[in-house]
Length: 467
Ligand SMILES: Nc1ncnc2c1ncn2[C@@H]1O[C@H](COP(=O)(O)OP(=O)(O)OP(=O)(O)O)[C@@H](O)[C@H]1O
Image 1 (cartoon, protein in one colour):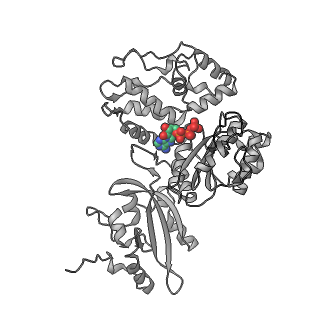
Image 2: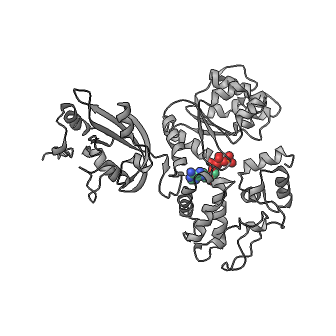
């Protein structure tokens, strides 16, 4: 029996009579990555086997179709629909262009990296284009039970930057408000890099004293200080061959910043109490919600360290800058069903209310609001009445769902007297202190209530002398 050799589908009538293009089409057949050949008028002339497998669909023939129809369901090229069109760019520069798009695929919308290269004929004219498509697995454009989700322009810009930098060894600096997903992004940088099979080590730089910071990071020798009964491996050593994520780098004490700089510049360090030089091997990702440039001007952050870590800054958008993503995030979180509890759905009025809110606590706050609403959704449907009353004056009671009109609610022992501060006010130090004083519950509950991470809450408490 002869094996069946699949042939590359080609739109023969439209194939340019250019030998290079024809040779290319047969060459592409054996490429592992999905590729198509386009004419200068956006028509798909040929597609390789990998493309057929990943993007082809029997119900939607693509040969002879416009690429923007197939990938975006648009009637006009991407640039006329408000998106970046790589063909337009490649035509202008006569060189390759790369862009991150969301494509319709047989599985639904997916993030795809598109690279387009023009093919020139003997006269130097563009005869065709080759488009290579790479599925981006770092984030989902559909509701997903885990990982990063998003598809708004602001999210896509951050994701495109992540895709660019991940394969390199450049340090990455993630900048964004609390709860915008800095840790999740850092993990995604690691997973999209060559070091994905190595360790991903998180160092929380906040709340660590100088001595603790040094021994946590570099480890210590036996007998280095009272209580050092054995040699301890530091986090830099744990991160060997992987990624070291320095979370809240803006909180590193000045005296430690110089040691951190030395580590990053020389790739070497010494254990506390040790004399041998150790060699580090990690990729650095750092994050902060603090204005590092401003801190630099105030003498609170070393410029040499700043320039070292900020080679590739990525700004993570606040949730209010990516409101289009709220339905997607909501459906993703509702998918993350609690074991033993039925899946929830959300009514349009609730979704609208969520899209109107400003989300000072960002995605973490959204998760918490949904977790709370879950407790009131007796019939499995989240309604606007199950959400906090953001329109009312900022009191703790306004954070409770309405008593009237809402379906019977459990008598939740939700903390707090009226007059305590709600989420929107926590940037104000006095209001924050009042909220803390008025709150009755655990630290974790207080953090959830304020839309802060426990770490951020701890930092704020310490900074204001309330810890
Ligand atoms: N794009 C996203 N898709 C899905 N979940 C997200 C996304 N971004 C953040 N989250 C979720 O939001 C929560 C907060 O994210 P994360 O801890 O990464 O934020 P952060 O910016 O590091 O916060 P902090 O600065 O307070 O530590 C987590 O539960 C995370 O899983």
